[in-house]
Amino acid sequence: MNDFFSAIEDLFVNVLFAPFDALRALELDNWWTANLMSWVFMIICMVAFVYWMLQLKEHSNNKEEDKSVTSHSYL
Image (tube, rainbow, N blue to C red; front, side):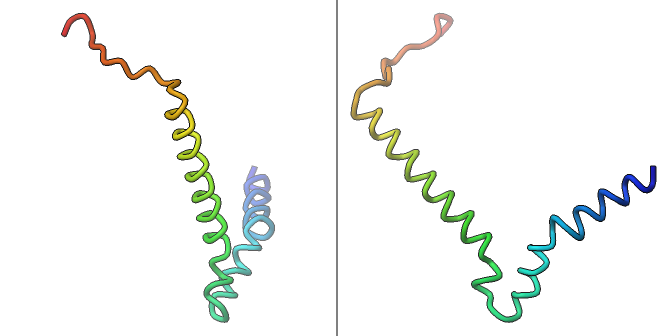
């Protein structure tokens, strides 16, 4: 059973996290390149946010949302 967990550790440490280790070593040379993954994720989030806001504006302009004010019967 110990070999199984050692294999999982080896997979993550030596294979899957190797690109991030390379980025960490690169930080001493160029900060901007070392933070490339952060920049990519921020750009993806900004694009998704703008797309979502444009979709909300489009639905608001089409009057598709029911904005009638109603309350529960017990109020």
